[in-house]
Length: 215
Length: 77
Image (cartoon, rainbow over all chains, first blue to last red):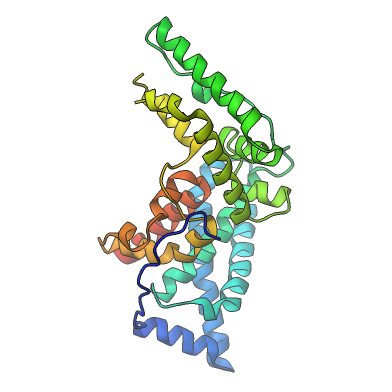
């Protein structure tokens, strides 16, 4: 899905490095070599998933160590399926291991974001406009800020479709993670971002010259 | 009106001004973008719109930071 179109960059036909070529050959082989490669691939993915879990651990104090281990293992299992299913999509524009790691990290991050929102209602109305309430130097500036916030609220109410409004408010005002919202609305992250992009463009157009005074 | 906090809040709400790619393209090219950056090359020149997307999509930004930290750490070993 493309939000914006660009002149197509010259596609690189990178020569595969020896390690990446060996990975692909082993994973496409049969028998013991294949099984061994799948096992090594799972180890790589588990390492990436555990890295992501460790990175996010401070934000998930309610999860115990064994729960986090289970999430990492589940992420590695799911990532393994994705990698094996998409092996033909690997274009050799990076090392094979870097391409693989992104699946392990992505699966772990998505699971942890969903876990953090498990059982919580998704706020589709603005919870707070605190992000716009910044310290001002005087009454004139306070008035300008207040007028801008009113224009933002008005623009959201009048210029956007109901769906655009819900998506913009949930993601950009309330800070709901995009994959969490995608799961709840039964859509994809890519489709939601396209909606967010269109809503932002409309709102930016609506606010027009008001934005130029913000330095 | 000079107000960096307000500008930041508007940036979060309105996203990047320029053209940007979407989440699917971001995931597709994330490994290439990170390797170009780690090699000290101009990743944005080869993948235009990538950086703008990272500034507008917190989830993709997190995925990018994770991959860069992880691969950078692996290379340092």
